[in-house]
Amino acid sequence: MTRIAIIGPGAIGGTIAAWLAQNPAFSVTVCARTPFADLEVTTPSGTIVAHPEVLTDPASARVVDWVMVATKTYDVEGTGPWLDHLVGADTRVAIIQNGVEHVRLFSHLVSPERLVPVMINLPAARSAPGRIVQQRHGIIAVPAGKNGDDLVALFAHTEIEALVDPDFLSQVWIKLCSNSAAIFPALTLRATGPVWNADIEAIIRGVVEECAMVGRAEGATIAQSVVEATIESARTMSEGTRGSSLQVDRMEGHKMEIDARNGVIVRLGEKHGIATPMNRLMVTLLAASGSPWIVQAT
Image (cartoon, rainbow, N blue to C red; front, top):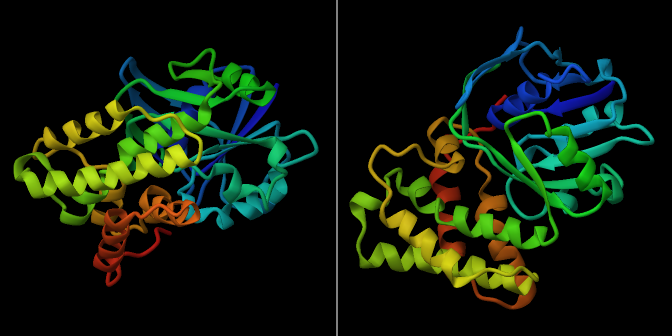
């Protein structure tokens, strides 16, 4: 029996937990703030239900074979008490988060050789604890190596496509480039398509081009077509389109992953001597716009 614990049963973590729990060879535990009876996920193939063990107190957790962290990036320290009880001598920890700094964020909590950074594309939304709608089939990418191979094997009997990517660095930076433009609608609370003009295009292009430049300096291969596709996606975004998690978090009064999404572009740009004025401006404005009423979810 393979023992798996998921920390953070939100839209992503809950969906992953429900799919893994369909395998009778797995014992799945969910580490949550709010207790719930079961998981029910509406997927493109139909509804799946799971009854994992649900824990709300880290002291009650036991050592497992795999931990999957699916919390927001700003809640890294909050995972510490869980990891203290879940991680044993042979436990491996998959970090399923936004951004490009998975290992750096957790290396003070778990030995880096046991950390597995995960790039995920899994559109899903949670309506209540344990209730999730998965909008499209998911894709997971992990670095090459034994840890990556073993994590991919866990998803063999799910409808989440997991694969090993020998150029994982490029994959996470390509995703960040695609996500970087989402800071504009998160700030304006408007879809970009209906208000598109030359000035907005210049802002979006600046944000994405800066991200690509910094990613390339970090060693990622990012084609110019990635930049152009991101701009085109922004240009054609229709009114009423469900925004990115950044926009949703702002609208729901939750703390936002500004640093992991765009702040990292500014920080790593400074490291490489690359100017990132558009990202710096947008990060500053979004942080200021949320300061009076954005609070961390409890």
